[in-house]
Image (cartoon, rainbow, N blue to C red; front, side, top):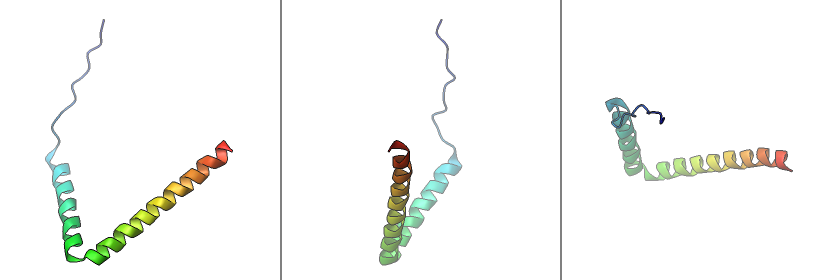
Length: 65
């Protein structure tokens, strides 16, 4: 006999949508008003992300080799 699953809610709450819209608008305003600072922030975040990935890869590589 097949099990019946509880249906997942399809609609989201209002608060997460408002928060994500606010963050998107804030990032857009920062990019428009201060493009060079926004570019520097994105470059710094990208560098940090690359650093994290390289450190994780080194950690995993030590166990494999």
